[in-house]
Image 1: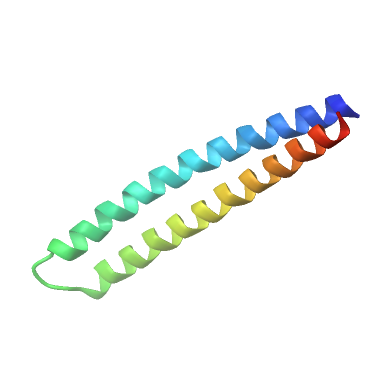
Image 2 (image 1 turned 90 degrees about the vertical axis):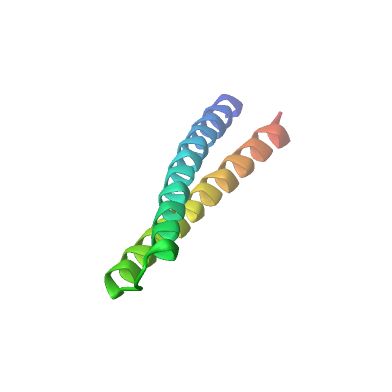
Length: 83
């Protein structure tokens, strides 16, 4: 069982790392949209919708990264508890 927990922890940590990379990408994209929105000479509904979509993607990606990190932590703690 200990090896299974170790593999589960490693897989969860890899998923968390990948989710964090996606979050960083969406965060950068959201920042670019925010800058374009801020620097636009006229505020438009289309730009607001684009910003809202980018920010929503950023928040969802952050949630996924945190979720996978918590799963990895739980799997590692279970592995250490068993060892």
